[in-house]
Length: 205
Image (cartoon, rainbow, N blue to C red):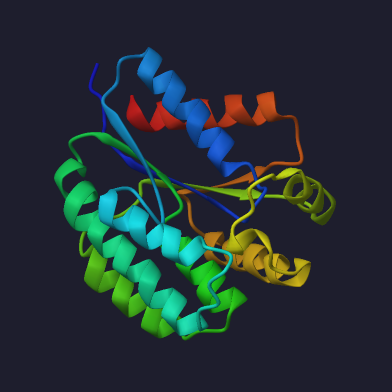
């Protein structure tokens, strides 16, 4: 059976369950002996992981534009060292990608959308996600899940209104996009795991 090798992205604010779902998909692809890579943003290779530590360190208080440039620096390293050589050759699962930059830095922090779009186009060129899973979470569950986190980074400590703006941003970005799937993380986890895995397998086979 012919197998496609899509780039699949998992997006959402903190506590939305995206990492749990991407891990579930990865586990099942491994069982099926399918070739894939799983990476996160920021991060994904040695250089990008160094930048990730810098961005997420809760003792750092970067200007929002500095934050944006650091995210782009990490993405550039990821594209050149990991994504380009695996694109269309292996299934790529990504925990965050370009929509996170728009949702957080534009919708959340008010930075220029056109600038973000332009730099993303320069970095990505022909690289495009085949599907984007946008995980949404209620305010109640968001607070509950963040409170349970033992090791919080800088992005776990924003006020609730910031996360609301970012989540609305994700939903705006997903409007009228047929390759975007909204996942309600307030529902039972097993139900969401099945929904996402079935959709991913349909994209591959």
